[in-house]
Every structure is written in structure tokens, then in C-alpha cells.
Length: 151
Image (cartoon, rainbow, N blue to C red; front, side, top):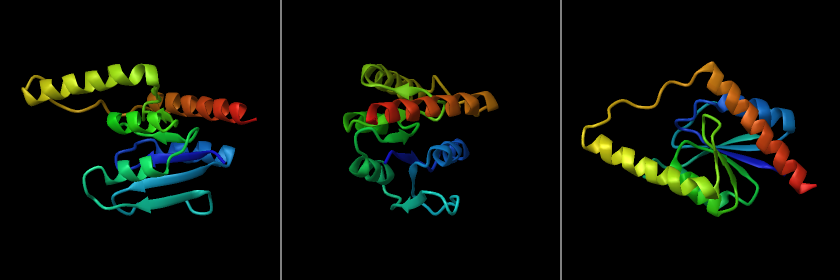
């Protein structure tokens, strides 16, 4: 059965993921460093891990399998999950691929250097309704694509 893993602590699109999971009857594991509310009565479970550095990431990588879906904004985690054969979507709906992850990691590293030098301040823009809609559409397409491959 298709499984979705959510890197949940900073994930703004959990309601959208739950909606798609319910529609397709997907297993969902919400991985977080602390307890949070998840919908009851669905195939959704919460996995609370320690609050050490990368504990949630490490847990996801240990459990993810080929053709599972991982939702994360964490670029290094996305890279590790791609290596495991998973499909990876960012929280804005950006699909990470083997072809794009190298450039994405390089851009991330460059921006981190600029921030540490004081060149860039502030964080990512707030998520909009349009972002949520685009994410829903992309997640739906990824699920359909995997289901076609599994037949």
C-alpha cells in the first residue's frame, strides 16, 4: 500500500495531505519531535521521535521505501529519500528529482553562506491559498502516477 511520510514539525500543508490520503485510502505517518493532533479514524498515525538533531529525518529515511511519498521542505532529507527510491514533494508542491536535487542543494548552500554573511535576512514567504491549491494538485498527480506504475 502506498505510504506518505510527513516531515511534520514545520509542514504547513498537513490538512491538504490528509484530504488526499483520505481520497485514495493511503497510509500516512506524521513524523514529529513532539505530540500534535492528527485526524482520528483514518490511516494516519503520529510517530513522535526525540528532539535531537535530524532525529525525524533519520526516522523517515530508515522507514521509507521505493515509491513511498515524502513531504518535506528539508533539502538534505529530500536528497536522502530520493536515494531510497521515494517520491519527494516540497511543501509548495515542488517535486524533487534525482536530476534537480544537486542544483537545489547547491542553491541552499549558497543562500546559507549569504545569510551567514548578513546578505539575506528573513525567511520564506508565507504559504498562500494558491500554494495550497498547487500542492494539492501536485500531490494528487504523484499519487496517480505511482498507482499507475504499481498496476
